[in-house]
Image (cartoon, rainbow, N blue to C red; front, side):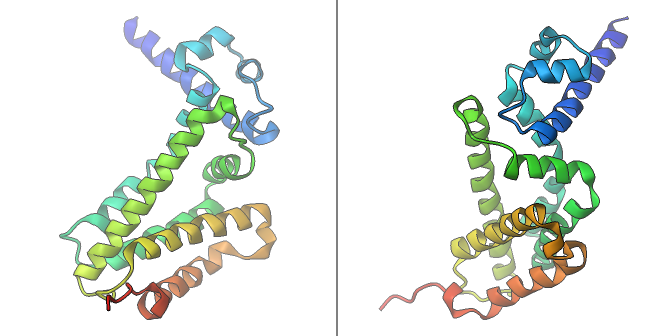
Length: 214
């Protein structure tokens, strides 16, 4: 009986998250209340508060779903034993861009974060978590680039922090533009060329070299 109750609780939790995803996408986060989500999910508000502290906590649980598949890819770029970290970093970047065209759930959640979430006081914790995620992403990218430099795949004087910031900006900028105007590019087709252009810049751009001390 206890096992069934635990399974039922997990099923209810997942239903709430699934419903929140669709309600946030349809109405925007600031215009969606927990009461709206409870009604759409067919549960009481008490059931929501049993699983989540507030709307911010529910939003975070929804967003965490799309982060998990990248953990393994990130680990490969950082692994000192990886023979080709640059290729792994390229694969990860292409996947970030292309997967959003192929996975409707990922597309909805990323679009909610980028275009349908106002960082109001109520969503302050979400904003802080997102800021942490951005900083961590840049650190991971920088680590992957450093790994590639150590393997002789990139110039030894590459400005790693600047290069990492640019790659993160490339990913978020392309996704933002494509989600807002999906007809502006065929991202599924163009993802590899966009990423390869950036990697060419890494290898060749003098602006991405560390300043030489006089």
